[in-house]
Image (cartoon, helix red, strand yellow):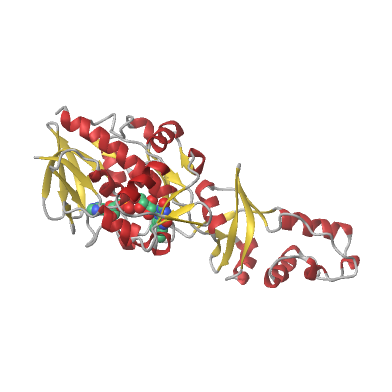
Length: 376
Ligand SMILES: Cc1cc2nc3c(=O)[nH]c(=O)nc-3n(C[C@H](O)[C@H](O)[C@H](O)COP(=O)(O)OP(=O)(O)OC[C@H]3O[C@@H](n4cnc5c(N)ncnc54)[C@H](O)[C@@H]3O)c2cc1C
């Protein structure tokens, strides 16, 4: 019998293996190569973590345990581990740590001879204190299992719902799943966004009490860009607010309005058309018209129709609820069943927060697995 069967050779599964005391373990992966999400992440350079790590950068229903796990193996600890193993991340965009050359460096670091590729997990049952995992090819019997099968996004590189299915089968509650870090589609009233496809600018995006100041990008399907992607993590339904300008300029009365607004020309043209204000000399516009321009540029409010979906989402919001797991991310329902990574109900913003969670949670689960094996 195997001590530990790790389901999924992604960031969490491979990192957990690094901390196991027993070498009687296997890692099952249905892809033909491990860690395909690491491979494509961060534009091929993998944004591993962030200088500023806080639970405030995450969406979760149970922040206390998540905070504690992130604190226990934090960004500094992760960076030290990476440096110790010969991969010194470089900082970009002031706070984001990336692989120095390519994400393959991290994949090489996590490489593991116990990964069995081409094994698609279809079911897990628990009988007489042992787990029987069925793949399309065979069965594996183990004392413990770690579910590290990730979320639903990017099915084309291996994402599946098996982790959630296993959790549910054993009686776990799944916080509602939703594509996140993804572009937003628009309703009919905002179809003017589509005319702006390709236009980008810095803007402030507010959703609930969260606010992001970063690039937004108008797209054929709606609106995208880092500020929108971050906002999508916190958006469920209802409105979001965009501040296209952070301060309204002092206008010169005898000059044309559009020439005085520090925004892309194409944007101003469609924006003014949308709010029904003619592009004239400022002196020829009423106070009320100028008020409408000002208000909409500083705080434009609209209700997105939905998201670009899992095929474009970087992550899945929601997952296995932490209150049904112990401090080692072990099931309180079935001992020996552990979870780590994106399958859990902890989803980070852009900037390396999701890999940080994958690594912190995997390290924590390894601690629990080691204790569980030692006592069995
Ligand atoms: C395009 C893109 C870019 C991203 N960039 C970043 C970034 O720069 N920084 C960041 O922090 N996060 C980034 N993310 C998010 C990050 O990749 C994930 O949050 C992280 O990989 C989660 O790790 P995980 O180990 O939980 O899951 P995964 O890395 O998804 O690993 C799960 C593994 O399980 C395997 N699996 C699934 N189902 C089965 C099955 N039935 N049988 C066998 N194997 C199975 C999968 O093939 C996969 O290898 C990005 C995501 C995407 C899609």
